[in-house]
Length: 206
DNA sequence: GTCGGGATCCTCT
DNA sequence: GAGGATCCCGACA
Image (cartoon, rainbow, N blue to C red; front, top):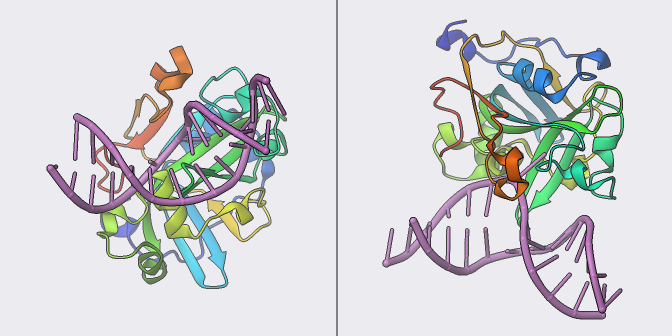
């Protein structure tokens, strides 16, 4: 896929309707999400884009994962069926969106960290204010704002709901690095579970 | 009921 | 590079 083709408006993207696609370990889902399309249809319109950066959170043993401290009211969605959206508020300001995966009911998830917005640019710009397009959805908080996600979207079904994933052409060139902001997680903080497309200008900073 | 801290981001120095 | 914004969650008393 050329860069020019990647920036064409989304014309009939094929939604992932097979829940088994999500019913896999976060490690596998995270890599397949790179290059895939994230779409959110709201009353205001559609925003869609190509996923360029994610982080995998691996079930209850991963001390960086919310599920590591057991099921709570906040993280209950992580313990439910794969293929749902887990949205939570961080630092009292930003909404982070995760794709709940499996296998089975294993509470794993993939944090969506950066997207290249390719449809609904006007709406995304209106939600984000005056920032360069490269930063519209760079970073999980910015991504949540650009796509209009808030806690009302927590638990949304990606297979049947108004937000969904369309499989894209998986990038052959991606890199792994440690996750951001999880220094409290001991040895898990150093595990390279962050995946991003090499040299993509739409990735988050750092 | 109280309190500490957080899967962030932006501005200012 | 440092610090502030802002509020929900969860632990603990």
